[in-house]
Length: 371
Image (cartoon, rainbow, N blue to C red; front, side, top):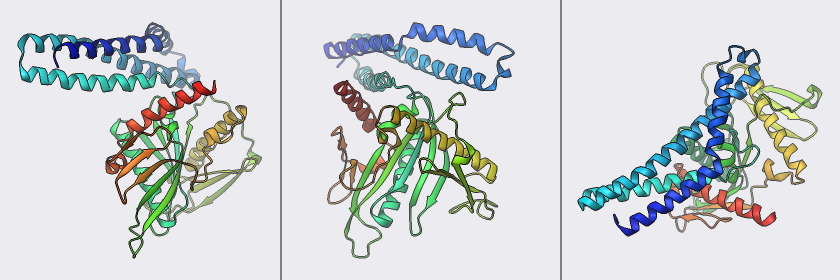
């Protein structure tokens, strides 16, 4: 491959990188980084903590982005040198190394190209993800727990932070619901395409007769708010209930009424948090979740499509966006993008990048059609 084909692919990668650099506007990013660095050096920055967190957070995101772009540009440029070495030496080992590097760089460029499609107002934010079991009884609860593990494993593969706010365990197996945050730049924009109903078909491990069972779970993704976001929630509009935490827990977690459930009376939105030992801490975390969900509702109402961000899906037939089939054959298929794989186990282990990237491209295409 260290010949015309290699040269053609390298030129394509170089052109794609050039387009990415133009779309991201690298000079503008560098100028904004310089401006933010000046603000960070101001000794009075932390007199206003909300603004300080906004400035340092934005600087961290931009620096990470510029490092990723410049690092990948260097890798693309280095490919040309490696290609020349492979051609001159005609060494099979060098040729194999060049081919391997080309594939890795091409994949990295493709992932970065996907990032340029995330231009929504809140796409850069952390993501608040909720998993809820739907129709299917104990199998659905077990499926919900499988999906929770899938997303946590995906985040771990990328080195993203995960904070679980609440887990409601089912009686026999699995979970009724769980809410967690994925803390990484563009986590919301990336994971928002996962919202919807997921469907599992398998031989039920909970059926003594070994019958095939279809079960459902719903995924909801909303952006996590920053302190500078303004959502006013009058105290009289929120009912606060405290209760004893359930499920696995350390000393005092399951022995005191530390868990908190908040109900927003006007909208009926209910959130809960039980991951902390302190009732006060759990209430604060629950308010973060409630505020994020109310922002999602506010945005959706402004666009006259309430369910678009809220993800208020029925988790049943007719609304599924992805199917996971373990019997009579092995396949995971996204019903919107038609992307599929014959390795469900890898998907449940967190290998969902291809599905996410296909979803982002599909959504961008759908937005263009609507426009």
